[in-house]
Image 1 (cartoon, rainbow, N blue to C red):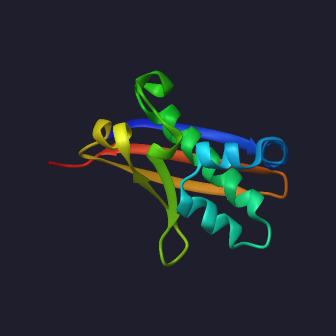
Image 2 (cartoon, rainbow, N blue to C red):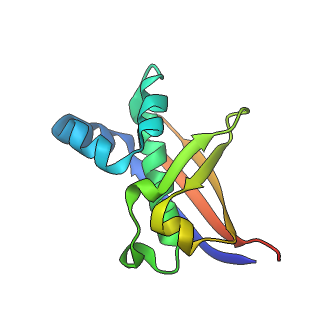
Image 3 (cartoon, rainbow, N blue to C red):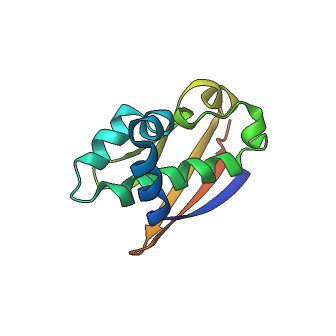
Length: 125
């Protein structure tokens, strides 16, 4: 059963400007060490950070509580499985909120924008 859906669109240039302005403060507030490491392993890290940012926003929108329910950026960690498919690892308060649920995500991007879609699905008992 679907509990929530969320979508987010992020301009890659906006993330680039934010990184240029706030650098480590922004990165360390929003992303986990693993997310930063993954992005920095790429030739151009910014689109990968923008994608992770978009997933976090999409998940926040899919939560019935939204941002007011104690959502923290690092509570949602985006990883890729061995085939490259994005998946979400939950931490902290969001992990507790979504116990017994799973999150499905999809990410797509062009040269300028990233879109992420998240579905929160209650697992069958």
